[in-house]
Length: 111
Image (tube, rainbow, N blue to C red; front, side, top):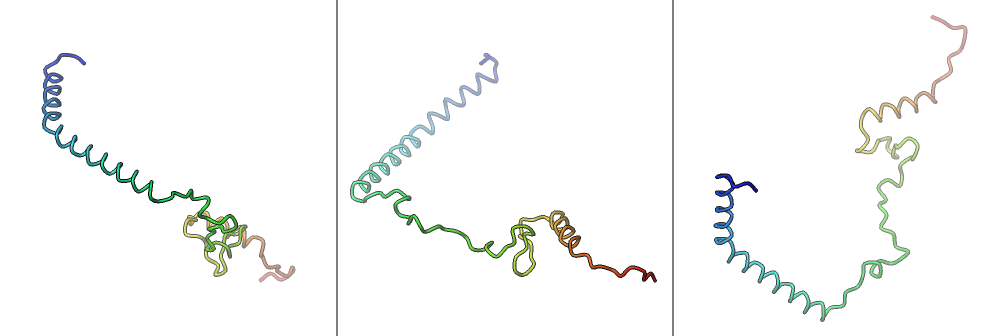
């Protein structure tokens, strides 16, 4: 760092801040260390079990919200698109769906 007036002033102010906040930081550090000691005591009393053992292997936490949704059209049983699908994508999917359902018009009849 250069020895400009500004950098000297900044160094001076940082040193004052360290002197002022030093006791508070030390007290806070002691509190954290005490909390760590308490956690070690609790750890001796309680048995820690990894989450893989708590959860049954056959029990899958599967959300059944999208279970009735068509994978191709993304429509649910009520004909609604998911909330995360933006309107442009909805329009595109609808156009693709309607294109396959075009009704046949009898030829020869032109009004």
